Length: 155
Picture 1 (cartoon, one colour):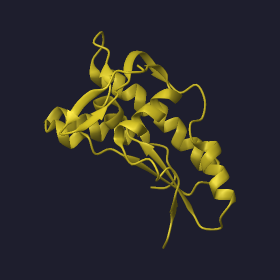
Picture 2: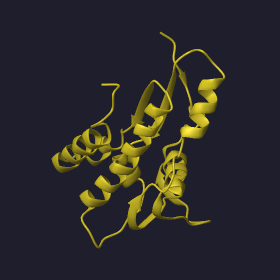
Picture 3: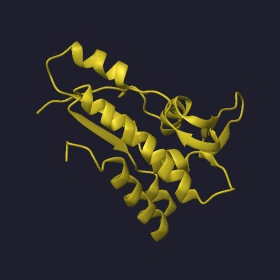
């Protein structure tokens, strides 16, 4: 089955983290705060300074518009909570796990709204947990993923 993917033009993780972070509360962004991540690749990580929440839908409008232009099923693409956490400067006044779960709840709200808007599938990019290589990080990744999709009808 061929499935069209919205947001497939975004191929850099930092671009995706920045896009979704701009839609969430509790994030700040720099203009020239570039950091070398590896090799010649530079990123501009957001700063998580407060509690994270989703004030409004992030991708529902664009996904619904794309779905209205085709009869093929659409797949919504979201950045996972651990990827957003690991590619950001995270506040240090609470455990990283609390911030991660706040991000997961915000993404969960987006997944539910995408389902209501009849976007048939949703995918999250959750690959950056592999870079941390710790049992705690892997458990956090699994728990945040389960929290994100706990009411999802697609499973």
